[in-house]
Length: 235
Image 1 (cartoon, rainbow, N blue to C red):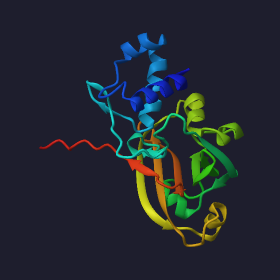
Image 2 (tube, helix red, strand yellow):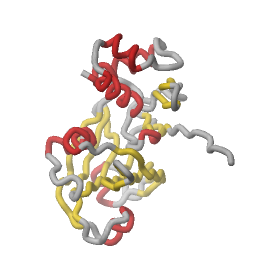
Image 3 (cartoon, rainbow, N blue to C red):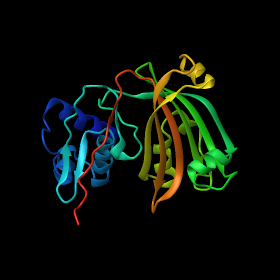
Image 4 (cartoon, rainbow, N blue to C red):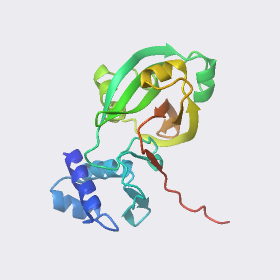
């Protein structure tokens, strides 16, 4: 239900029906005839797609995107997994799904002890049939004892939220241009050493507890990154 409401809100934003600010939760509850929790979940989907910004005490304001790209990543949302259009949908082809004990290099990146057990997921993701990215992700088994094949093939973050109440509350994001290794180039069907945009993320939940590290190489044409920054308070 909340996905349908989210898509309707996105369509109204794109059509200009919601021009400057989103109606209040109370108004949206009355409009769609659903509970506050359903509306909040729908708003969260729209926010994840980079179309809204929160203003404390005032509500949600509409972002005017500088691009009509179908692939606009919302780094302000913490997971960077968001598209501009209501109709866009990512599909996954799982390359690797197993458990590993991370070596020193990855342990250092994740700030965990050497040999920490993690789920490893390597996926090729496509957007409307066109190759979108190569994603390599690690999930801490200490917090996530079971990760299902169904979740890996669909939405891991949705599974974590519904099964373990794990939701990203903050992240460290590093954007860079990286050259593809032989293995990466083979999966992406690109030349070895080809330069592509790369996003590395450390995701945290609750009171800053680390649960996920991912490295994503993007090859989708016209991809954009969105980030909302508020000015720092002056002393």
